[in-house]
Image (tube, rainbow, N blue to C red; front, side, top):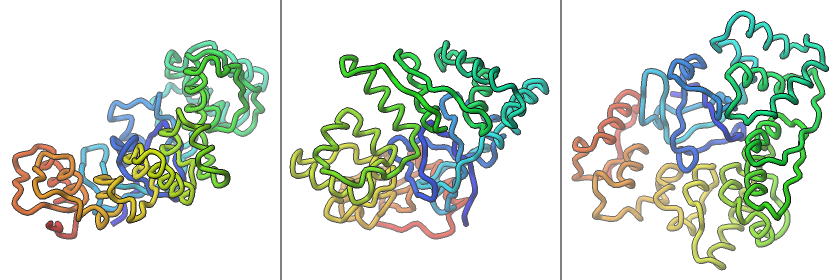
Length: 329
């Protein structure tokens, strides 16, 4: 059975693509409705991107009153901010102001001035209403917004938002301020919807150029599948190991059998057949491996899952959602 839910996240996701709850996705919560996210005392201050996702009931391993957790999820569509506004707890005046921005009924000069003033504060210091109005300005389609120049480390979170909504910006940061420039590049990648864009060029040059943001490149699916496989081959030849294996699987890259040992135990989620022959004989019930297997619908003969609270919670959810029987190894 397929279940429609909503994911609130701070990293842009590729539509019509399947991700796994590993790496940066490991704590993903899939809410039944918009209002459930707000009722769960959540604030999307740092999770401003909302997606409709699809879960298979067989993959659900945790269920609460408001949300589910599952081993994998397919991104269906980006939810427009207009849809989210309907469920925000706003005064009638604030709701009217935000809807006026979204419908293009506010004077353009006023919008531009309000937009510029926003950047005088750090993003984390914006009030809830200021943040909602800022997102409304970014997501509207009636006003042309000026380019913003970033020169302060404290303001760099804005970069991912402007990148996500395709708003113009530049920076005066230079290589001499490496930590700030690294943060700037990471924020740009987190907000970018330009997926699988690296398809040409030598992988060695790519790694050298993006050395300090390699992790982010996997989280944001900047590499094509072909380039990802080239990356694996290069890293094994040059380094002897593949970095960030959990992020690679979490981002939904397909793992070739010849690399299976380097991505174990994470392939338990994405392709159990690649992982089962690597499971050690002495695995315990409280091990990370046994928990991944249980979440994926596998049990190890002889283990008593009732002694571990996490395993008990997984089994309770599986009893509700999983229609197939556990597979034993």
